[in-house]
Amino acid sequence: MPPERMRLAVIIGSVRQNRFGLTVGKWFASEARQFGEFDVDVIDVADVKLPMRMPDFGQEPGPEEAAVLAEVTPRLAEADAFVVVTPEYNHSFPAALKNLIDWRYMEWRAKPVGFVSYGGIAGGLRAVEQLRLVFAELHAVTVRDTVSFHGGANLFESDGVPKDPEGCGTAAKVMLNHLLWWASALREARAKHPYRS
Image (cartoon, rainbow, N blue to C red; front, side):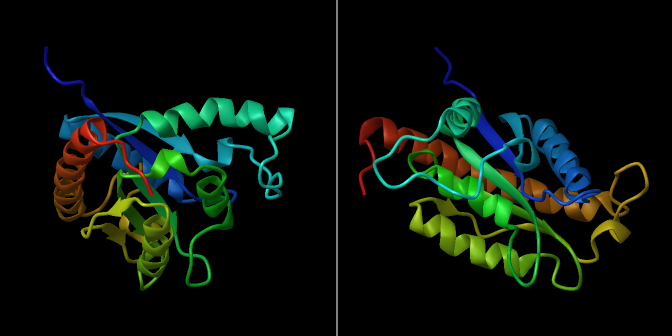
């Protein structure tokens, strides 16, 4: 029987009104589907209505939070790899993105994470560097190569297509190849030896 296809969750991290993140996220999800090795699930943080206030340790979330978690948790758990699409806010990443990350723990462990960033001169890379620290604490593996858009919306046409599709498309393929390698290796490792921290 052929192995089950790898599952990639693309997480759009911005919740700002009129955010550019949707354009970047849709572009990358299309690239990932064309890559052909992943089943792609797009998780928009703006649609995940988790409060900033969490229950105390050992306590169950309230009914509203439990309903949201019941929808998003299986999607995170089933993913073999993640790509986080993030802007840079004040040299860091959006609070809403961190909130989603913090509400879950086991779902991230022993899985690879890639990054697509955008915004300004730095292209969101300072947000990426900080997210690497967060995911290391969660026992996830971040891949080295990223896709970054230095200048954000200025690099895209009005229809959401990058003005230089070859450059960013090549960067996306490099990252997707590395994610596929790590996702395959870590899925096999988790099956043979359940990960413990």
